[in-house]
Length: 186
Ligand SMILES: Nc1ncnc2c1ncn2[C@@H]1O[C@H](COP(=O)(O)OP(=O)(O)O)[C@@H](O)[C@H]1O
Ligand SMILES: C[C@@](O)(CCOP(=O)(O)OP(=O)(O)O)CC(=O)O
Image (cartoon, rainbow, N blue to C red; front, side, top):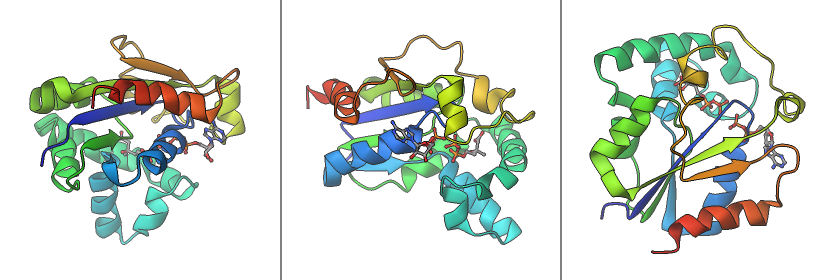
């Protein structure tokens, strides 16, 4: 059974992508599946370098030790085939009507999903002010925060929904409610 809708989430580091998508998953429970494009990247890296995959997948500091290398390697792979990680992540996804893709970063990610799933796609940008992100542990890192991985979608404007998850944000229930609005036709 193919998905009936695919929610593509984007946002800067510590904007709250994992926080909001984890809570959305809890709300939708077994109707949904969270897909992470970074999963096949981290799996490869864990095997190659004998690292702890669970730590790489968590929101702690561990992944930051390897982020620049993972960005470089994954961009080389994308130069040959921009859909390579999107494809593997989706191939491994469970049969659920709602897919929650928690980490799109590049215009080519959106392009790949459009080419493969067309009208099923809805795109959501999570924004948060710098001060809030810093309080959550964000520190500017050259080679990470000034490259495609973090910046390619900064000038993208065609979002179906933009959610403020910084100062002045709504309660979680309201934030999730606006996302559910994208599913109302299901
Ligand atoms: N609205 C929020 N309320 C409380 N804590 C939040 C909120 N949004 C994010 N956080 C916390 O901030 C930290 C960074 O969020 P995370 O979802 O990991 O960001 P990202 O995946 O975008 O890097 C996590 O510890 C998360 O629990
Ligand atoms: C190499 C990466 O895939 C690492 C992504 O790791 P996360 O998606 O865990 O990052 P944040 O949640 O924003 O902190 C980045 C890329 O450019 O593909």
